[in-house]
Length: 93
Image (tube, rainbow, N blue to C red; front, side):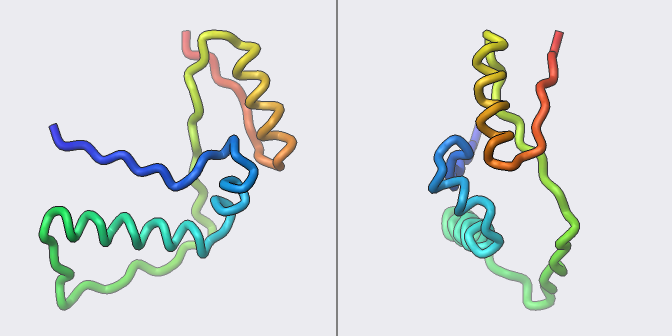
């Protein structure tokens, strides 16, 4: 099965986190991913393709884990809270 792994940064790295909060960086990453897919699969843009309008109200959720020990999850939760992210722990039992 074909698979693609894209790593544009890590939320646990302060320098990466600053980049990930930047709309310009996220757009740059998205454009690079699209370019790579087009090149890999020989895709061309349709002449009638219209760009998707920017939706500034969109929100995205990131799931980090799972963790075998709650203490590890708590540690990451605390770190992300300190960075200003609204975070919570969800138990999957």
